[in-house]
Image: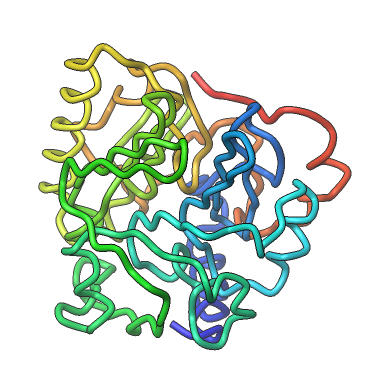
Length: 287
């Protein structure tokens, strides 16, 4: 997935999803005292800071303005030594690709052992109900391959790695310090709560729904309510809201009710994402 593939996705998906409210990313800014984010068109990448250490969650598109926008939230690309990857789609690993700016060429990436198979092309990632195969990412970072339930200790940061297949076969979510759950493309939040992520982009919608039920049971069984941080539709602290409709996937063929309701007509239009806005204050939490 070279830069041309990120550009192709922008052209095709921007046109396909205009007016439907499918994506509602946060603008670049501060979520709370630990988490900051960068917006890249319809997607977010996240930075989690504890003490002097910052880790990165997902690597976004192959996107020429990433270093600029990281500057808006005072994160130095050279300070990033560890990157958690939820899955290997174009909009989550682009900044690691061979023809990117290679801002993170010395960073170690963490992803599930199952998801890592996409990087070899066996199997190929399929979208649009299995009708289209995505290009194979060209990534050469040092990798740590993860198993379901594995615990990582990155300095003082504790990470619990949870396998949630469906969107991709090896998709993982990351529970960080028992207080933040980075969900990638597992949950899509609308005004009326969360759904399994978009139906046309899943390897298996049935598996996505089963994975979400398991994830909800895990969180409730542990008695924790982390801040749920999604890859495309913002955040929520309310478990009931986040899992309100996760017995079914969100239908990309129908207009949805995004949060907030005044989401832009074209969710790839990032003209309202500015440095002044990034420095203006804390971003909203939903639900």
